[in-house]
Amino acid sequence: MERRQFIRAASAMAGSLALGGCATAATKPTPLSNPQQSPLSVKVPPLPMIDARVDRIVAMNVCTRPFRAMGPRIEAEKMAAKTVVHNYGHGGSGWSLSWGSAAAATDLALNAGAKQVAVIGCGAIGLTTAIEAQRRGLDVSIYAKERPPYVRSAYATGIWSPDSRIVSLQHAEPFAARWKTMAQTSYRRFQTLLGLEGAPVEWTQIYNLSDVPFGSSVHHEPAGEPDYPNFSRDLLPGLTPQPVAIPNKVNPFAAAHVKRHPLLMFNIGEYSELLLNRFHQNGGRIINADFASSSEFAALDESTVINCTGYGARALLNDDSITPVRGQTCKLIPQPEINYGIWFWDKQVSVYPRRDGLLVQAQADGDFGNPNAVVDPQESEAAVRRLADIIAEMKTV
Image 1 (cartoon, rainbow, N blue to C red):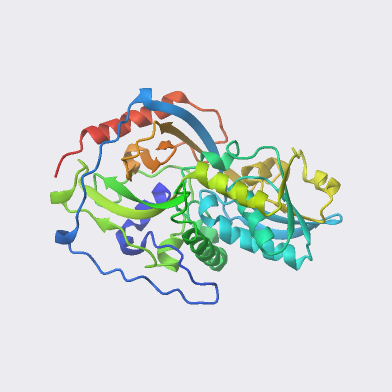
Image 2 (cartoon, one colour):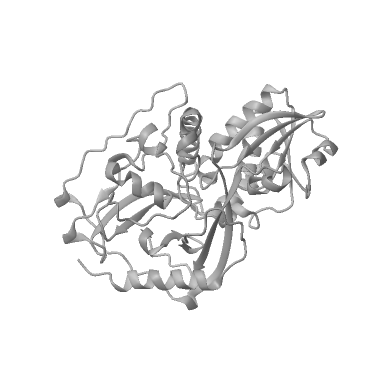
């Protein structure tokens, strides 16, 4: 979930992280039972300490999230003799909405009479779209310059955030129904991936920290970004365990205000391998290809193309509606005992307990509209030091 959106929604926190459930688009979701917890009943288990030191950094990466103010482009168009189905521009929600978006794009391909499909791109959206198309009887080849772990989406944080920079508030209303269907479809699919060997998808706990009350107007917000809707709260409330306020007497952090959020997390390395294996087991082929222009789609054998190029679509299609949003992360040496993450937006740092390493994300005011994909070591080192300060102030309760 994005920081600005979370801050604006905090005053209605009882539903702010509600997720799509197991209902289809034609079925009204049934909320899980979620009785309000008394502050006296809230327990915080002993939290093992994160070893946040710069000398434990083993990797640094930058991803470029493709935000479109009007929401992702999921539509078909004719390009000469080809039908091209576009499926890109998911902001910070690509992994989270991937299965629902894949279903929508596959519907369009089937409506065009497709039997064989060329999927362009092998990231989160491309892989899931290819597998969904296979599941529905299509013969699929992926054409891509890179494949995991070298695609842009491999550098994402990997947390369930289905409305993270997905659309601007100005354009939210016409996109809301499609978002709801995609979120429900995706969440239902992720339930089938829980408990698998290697834990490609699992539940975790995130502690959100603040020095001022949630919803306070004194919260810092990045400049230059549009307002975002809180679709999770407004369209799909009450379908997952709700965030819980941590009372002061059991609060292990120095921050005055803390909430604990149960969230789905994607261990992207393991999850990507799972997707690649399923695609190949279903008879799929990955063909190395680097397209400089969409006009080169004409040379493909397949009459239907599904374009899943993410931020790459900006150059491929000259699509200036895509706004780059820079995100830099680093990995610390894994600590298997760490089973929680931290958000501290006002200190511009967060950490996620991934299996392949503790993923530390730095936030900066200049990220929105920033296409710079060059790693800045000082940015990650500073974020790790800020995290170290948070850990050093933790107390036993």
